[in-house]
Image (cartoon, rainbow, N blue to C red; front, side, top):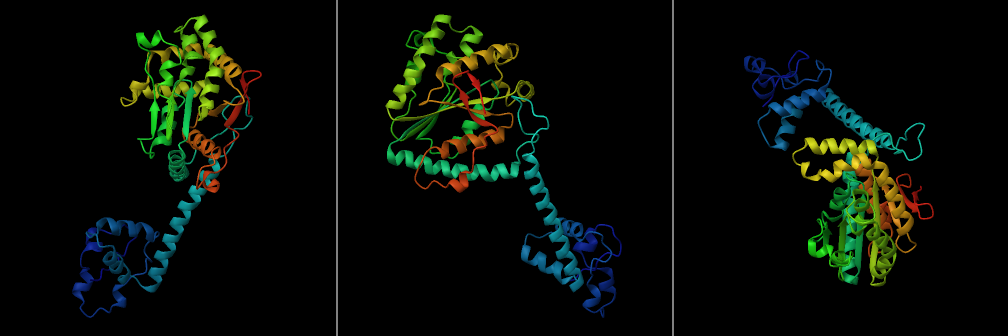
Length: 369
């Protein structure tokens, strides 16, 4: 079945694309070549193609393409092919440009300011996160086979992206051997126990990975700032935590301690977003809102924590998390880069970004790049 091309530059109608051409019906002696067209009346053959696909009632791709090609002269086919190539080239250029732009740095960057001007490219993120999650599965297989134990602690200011980062770690892991520990407020019984006791109960056995969404470090920052512990309790914790973690390491546990650092401006933006979104309102607690007026107090407590608990065997890793996608990618990269598991592909893992990932300075208690 052949269809005549419209003689104007308007988009094709249902009659011109999906029905018999009146000219063909009237003139039975019209030659095959006469009924074909070359897009001479169209500025953009690609737009014609889109309309053709929308108005043609068939799911048979082979028949659809044959029907269209039979309507075109050789010149028309060449014009359509050129339009398709140009369209794809524009899409490719846009993606490449976007990837380049995501690494643009802020001009006149101030100390402590988030370095990147633009967000991470989502298409690239989706591709990379999948590749990294495949590597995480390799890691988990190695952990199970070798009977290893891994603990990953995620701390940070409220709305820093701890839960979302953990989710990207565990999304495709076997839940029988990977779990999240996000402990609620201690019970009356737990409050009377040794402080670390309720956390010890969640440490992994052989072949397990445990992700702490907040941890025993509640007592280093949130509790003293918000008045949830006494000064004596705080001082006791600060003195005990290095030896506690040394015992953890001596038991064969591989320990990672992450601090996700979010700027004040970005934290406020995320709080507003949570307040407006019914699906995220549960994340916004009275403690979160109260923390806004205690930013400086939190900062002092954070630096004190780094000063007292950043050790050679159990160091802190700071990840600036104003851009959640960039933070997630780099958190996973750091873990995969530091464990020599079976089948590890460093070319897939890539390099950790030193602009947003760095150690703390345990001498001054500050964070340094």
